Image (cartoon, rainbow, N blue to C red):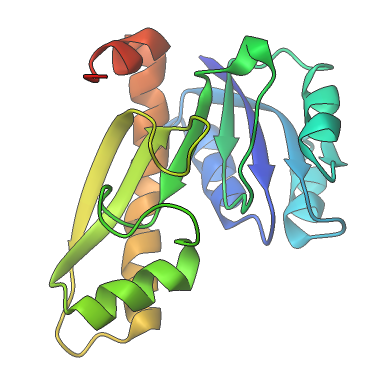
Length: 193
């Protein structure tokens, strides 16, 4: 069972999903701590309501000081909107979810509606999400799992976002279960450098 830290910047929708799936047994993990780089966000209030230790950390240094107080296997970027630099003991142990099928529509500046808008403008008929390990560059770490969704011609950006988030709620927990099953090194070792 993975012991996870959740980093977020907003409402905590992914935290809600993790909590629900841990409770019903679909996610084999335990949330040890929740940290936000934005003070007073709804995600921190939700974490407190669920009974998880919840903290505000304005930058990497402060976040890492908080994480050092907890026994954590994996750091999950759950709507965390900055580039996170982990301490040495957590390098190669940071997992992110991106709202497209990497390598499309990813990298610096591609998050949330920016991604979905680009997908719509390009006329894509399929998109999805990618769960991957994070490294020092946006969206370049080893891929753990990808899931696709069809886009209808008349879907607007909000409809695309809703379809992608729906599949994210399945993919992120499934990816974490795979990491728990196969181990972290499996995913780093399978990528050609």
